Structures are given as structure tokens and as C-alpha cells.
Image 1 (cartoon, one colour):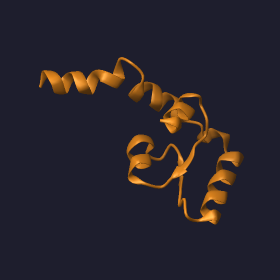
Image 2 (spheres, helix red, strand yellow):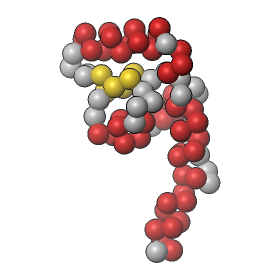
Image 3 (cartoon, one colour):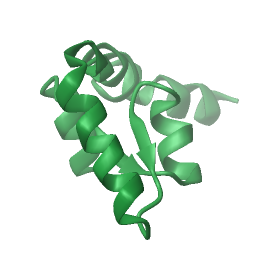
Image 4 (cartoon, rainbow, N blue to C red):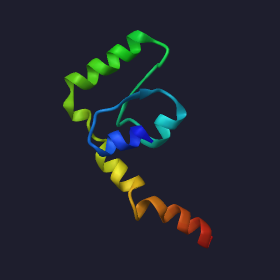
Length: 79
């Protein structure tokens, strides 16, 4: 949840490379190996050097803010 909130705030994100990250953010974040300090360092350096990576705000607004956040649930329940 904190990653979604940070994305909504317009932050550039460095997140663990895992299925959750890929499902929710795709290639709009820097995904790193959480067990590899070099990978983490490279990810942080990448977002510090490229401010254009702060692209999550629009995605988060479209997917997780009402009414879009409940449209899938409503469709499922009407199913």
C-alpha cells in the first residue's frame, strides 16, 4: 500500500522485483533484487539521475482511486 501511496504522490519508485510489483506498476518503476546491494544501489542511482521516472501518479489515479478502483468489483458482482 505504501508503494501505491508514494506513486500517487508522484515519487519515483525503486521496488523489489517480484510479481506484485510487475502486476501493479509494470515498467513504471525500477525493480531491483532486494537481496543484492549493488542492484539496490543501481536502482536508486537510476531514479536520482532520471526524474522522468516519476510516472506512477497517473497509473495510480487510474487504477486505485474511486470510481475506477471499484469498477472491476462492481462488474464482477453484477456478473
